Image (cartoon, rainbow, N blue to C red; front, side):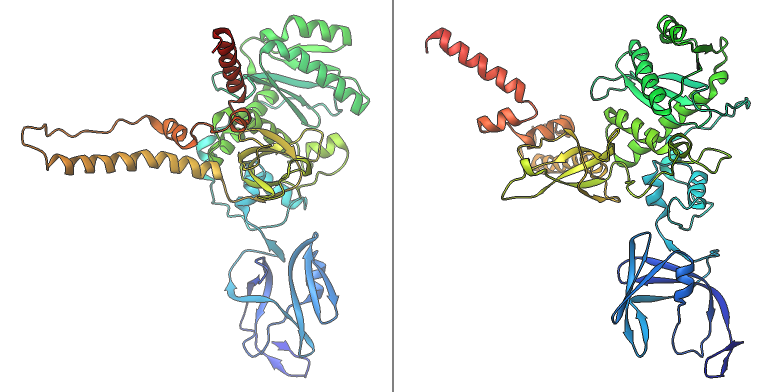
Length: 485
């Protein structure tokens, strides 16, 4: 029974959840909503919204609803009340127990580099990311394809102070080509906080240089010294590391032969990074030579995700402050990047189409791969670090291009076969009746034909093959001078 302000009563027919869709496109779920058919208007409690973190700002004859500086919707005064700008929906039976803003779990799954859902739930519990409904039976297809069965190792005693013990391991990916010629990556993981550093290597000989770089940075930042370093018995950890550790007073702990589980923290970290890297490449359609960028981004993200049995992130333990998640974007998505003032053209687009490939090191900028540019000063397939951009987190241009290129040759071959069969029926009987299949030179040949050769000197020297064109022009000029022609 519900008591109304005019001393009347009304029967409550049901109780459940209600989804309000605002004209702004946002959706809001209200829990414990009473269904009272006798009431002429649907009422929403502003006090409850405020209690659950929403902010209502009243201005003249309207109000604005926000949460964490994110605009949700607004309403206008009408008949001594404020009417919400929403499109009403029917009641739904969700298992929600509070008011929360609905956001796509798939989008946040992508933003966090396809991390497991338990880690996402811990982030929600810590109020690091917005609340959203998660189906416990849902499985990410990309994660299933990219990740292997996990192996558990015996628990060992944990170190409680930062830099008391550092785990390290080198992972070999030399069979996969990469931009810049890197073939390996090395990890350094603090045992107490699980904070991780990753460096890309062209050869294993660079491992000692990266360790010195890591050692100098972390000891200076934390004002402490590394006490112990644990690694396997790989050749890169033998002579150089022994000397450096001896000079710095660091105990170098090597695992027993054929006992990789003794360095399980580093082994598990490498496996997790490779799984996330593989999932990110598969879900976005980027080529395998981008695995270096796809390794650095999961490292950045895992440092901001609570590890198992802990409701705190490695970032917070390492830096002493909570991490921010507002600027996270889905890796590999389309981004319209604003052209910097020195390179902007007076007439034409003010942005270039790029692919978001990560976060700049020790900077607030993003990293982008130029995908399509009409600006002669910003070339295709170059990597740049900028801040101002508009992100389209559900658009993956490389994935769409991959699907289009894989389907184009098949359609052309079928068309050519049908055309040749029609022509064969019109020629003399003595002609061969065998089907002729047009030779395919592959998608690379088609791409070359579309691009064509440069028509002017400026196009030649500013293209991706500019150095080769300059060398060819120089050789031609030298030949003309030598032959006196």
